[in-house]
Every structure is written in structure tokens, then in C-alpha cells.
Amino acid sequence: MKTKLDDFRLRLGKNEYVPIMIGGMGMDISTSKLVLEAARLGGIAHLSDALISAVTDRHFGTNYIKERAKKYKKDAHLVNKLHAQFDLEETYRAVRLLVEDTMEKKQGKGGIFLNIMEKLSMANSKGTMQARLNAALDGGIDGISLAAGLHLGSLKLIEDNPRFRHVKIGIIVSSARALKLFLMRAAKIDRMPDYIVVEGPLAGGHLGFKVDNWQTFNLKDITMEVLAYLKKADLNIPVIPAGGVFTGRDAVDFIELGASAVQVATRFTVTREAGFPAKTQQRYFKIKEEEIVVNLYSPTGYPMRMLYDSPCIGTGMRPQCENLGFILDDEGDCSYISAYNAEVERTEGKGKLVVPEKTCLCTYMKTYGTWTCGHMAYRLKETTNQLPDGNYQQLTVAQVWHDYLHSTDHTHIKPPLPKEAQILDQHPDR
Ligand SMILES: Cc1cc2nc3c(=O)[nH]c(=O)nc-3n(C[C@H](O)[C@H](O)[C@H](O)COP(=O)(O)O)c2cc1C
Image (cartoon, rainbow, N blue to C red):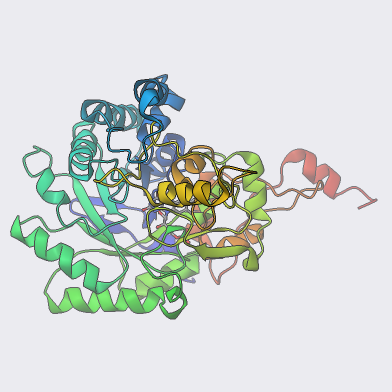
């Protein structure tokens, strides 16, 4: 019998999981439905609190975005946006609402974790981080993955929370160097992480590498470096590589190297449970390798991987910080605001405005116009059936899950064809 991913299990403390972790996909791409299905199947999946008020407005009938717009309308002309602060109580309530509602519906032995990005500084990085973390803990989340930042101060912000030492906490790093810095801080309050996600250069979303050198790194080497460092430091913490793990065999290769599980995301973007509209999913199935680029359009300052024709590229809308404002730093700035204003000045407001090199990420994440994906997305078409109309068959979380767990030799177990397509497929004219 050939080795398959289902031969392994991930152990975190007393809990045992199927060794697949679905990474956070903000905003609202890794939906409640998606994470609940992964938990039912015995693995771990992440909600994301990116643009949390927009998520609860969409699913729970809150009105946070409209109310913010109304409240700050008179100040919308101001260049600096420090006035557009987030109400901490409201941020807490929104995160808790999403977490609590999802946890109440959980079935099965899997885990539901929350991905919390430090780069979403929300014009008050410390205050909002504390509110977000506490809300997740109080809402009953199984685990928190600290993402998009070094998180040197994040653990300290919640050390008084009664669940601080029981909940699973992980850190996402792209180098052993970043991990060392985090562990030094964690040691000071005697709270080591329960797992470490090592995210390599082929991942989707923001990257922890430079735009012009990501090609010189590879996930296998970084994973080995992290494993060697932990061994030397006599630390027994599960390591979970992420980025480009496309087949069950890819995952097994990492586990045989010493990893405890894998974190994956791109394969799940084209599932029924994911947030992307069906039309965007068809675009994902049809991706060609040369269409996937790493650029600096994101105002976070991190490079981001996306499709060259993402709707967010080459636009010039007025900054939406009064409504959204999630990327505002502690001085009330976002690099999109400066890029926009420079362009207004240069063109003297004449003609259609196009802001080169930056995008209003909040707006385009909210409307699914930032088509981010992992580098292997050009192989999504291999994982399903092409239908008679030329489109590709949408998958379900359970089908992708089954393929990861049971396939061998880098092949894929495709889903059964829908009934209508089977009939057409057997038609003598085809
Ligand atoms: C559509 C999409 C959105 C993502 N959003 C986030 C995010 O909000 N926060 C984060 O830490 N990582 C994000 N990621 C990265 C994933 O969580 C994951 O670590 C990585 O993409 C795994 O590599 P793979 O996509 O090749 O499987 C995103 C990835 C994708 C594909």
C-alpha cells in the first residue's frame, strides 16, 4: 500500500486531527460554512477576522459600515484619517459574533481557528488587536493563528484572559529568524506557541518575502531550517508548512521530512462553501501560470500574489477609510491615500484617475476584486472535470479533502460528474 496523507494525524496537546489545516482566507473567502465542513471532517480550518464589520454586516444584519460612513462623512475630505477610529467595543462585538455563531454550529472533532493579521492595524494597532484576540477567546474559538506580522506584543495583550493558556495559539512565519524573535517574547511570559506555520514563497495572500527575491527561497529549505532550530533549542512544537502543497503526495513529502501537518488554501478557493462568486471560481480554474504575479499593489507594504487581471489593479477610487479603514496605521495613514493624493495633484483632477502601483485593498477585498491565489492555482483545472459547456465543475470541501487524504503519486481523485454532464458525455455526437 502506498503512503497517503490519511495515514498520519496531527496532535496538538490532547487533541488529534486529520493533518490538514485550511489557512485563513480574508475577507470571507474561508467562510463559516467552509470551516464548519473542515471541522466535521476532523481537520482544522481558519475563519479570518479581516474586515470583520463588513463580514458581520453581510451575514448577521449589523450596520457597522454604513454607520461609520455616516459618522465620519463630514471629515471625509481630511487627508489624515486618524479621526476614523474603530470603536473597540464594536470591534469586539463583531469578532465575537462571528466566532460564537460558528462555534455554536460546530460538529465533529476538528478545530475552528481564527487567522488574525497584525497588518490590519485599524488606526489603533494595539487596541484593536487586543479587542480582536479577546473576542475570539471569549467567543470560544479553538485556536488563533497570528499572521501577517511579527506579533512581538500580541501574546502579552491577552495574558489575563482566562483561556490564554488553554486555547491553541500558533504563529505564522516565513523564516527561522522571525520565529526566533517571536519565541524570545513568548518565553518571557512562559507561553510557547502550540504550533508553527511555516509559510513559503508560493503561498496565496501576502508574502513574507521581497517582491524581487521570493523565487530564491523554497518551502522545503525553510521548513528544514525551522525544524533544525527547534531541535537545537530542544523545543517540541509541531511545524506546519504552507504554500504550494497541492497534492496529497506533496503533503506526505513534508510529513516525512518532520512536519506534523500542512496548511493549504488555494485548492479550497473553488469549493461551493468558499466565499468567492462562482464566476470568479471559473476564472480561477482557467488560470495560466504566467497570469499569476507577485506585486506591491497592497498598501500593507507586503508583496501579494494575485492574477494580473484582478479588478483591483489599475483603478483610482477615492480612499474609503471612513467606511473601511482596516489598513490605517497608528498615524492614520495608508500608502494608498498618499498614492491617490499624489495622482490627484499630478492630474489636477482632470480625466479618469488611475492610481499606479497601489490599490484600495479594503474596498477590493470586500467586493472579491482582489484575485489572490497561491502559485499552484494554474493547476486547479487538473483537479476537477471540464463540463460540456467549457466550464469546470465546482468542487466541495469534502471532495478536495478526500483527494488530499487518499490520492497518491501526485494524481487527483476527481469528483463524480453531475448527472446531466454524464449524459452529454456519453452522447454519440461528442
Ligand atoms: C484567496 C486567499 C486568501 C488568503 N488570505 C489570507 C489571509 O487573510 N491571512 C493569511 O494569513 N493568509 C492568507 N492566505 C494564505 C493562506 O492562508 C495559506 O497559508 C496559503 O495560501 C497556503 O498556500 P496554498 O494556497 O498554496 O495552499 C490566503 C490565501 C488565499 C489563496
